[in-house]
Image 1 (cartoon, rainbow, N blue to C red):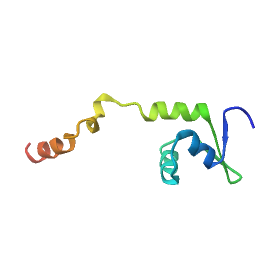
Image 2 (cartoon, rainbow, N blue to C red):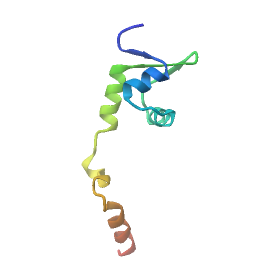
Image 3 (cartoon, helix red, strand yellow):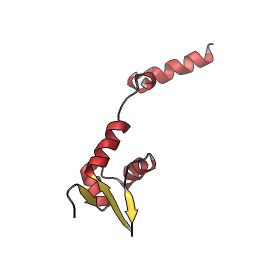
Image 4 (tube, rainbow, N blue to C red):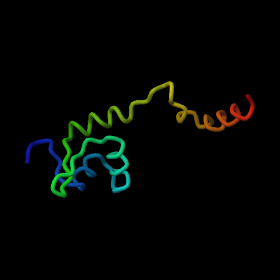
Length: 81
C-alpha cells in the first residue's frame, strides 16, 4: 500500500477521528474525496486534509452560528419588518 493511502472505512474513520458511519456518510455526501472500489473504501490523507480545510473554513458573511442568539434575532426580524 502506498504511503498516505487509507484502505477501508475503519482506517478513514480513524484518520479523521469520527467513530460513526453516519458522520462519515454525511461528509461523503458533502464531497469528501473517497472512492468505493470493489467494495473497499479508499482515500488519501492529503485529499482528506484538503477537504476538511475547505469544509471548516468559515465565511464571515454566513457565520450566524457563531452568535448563539442569531437564530432568535432572525426570527424577530422576520416577524417585525
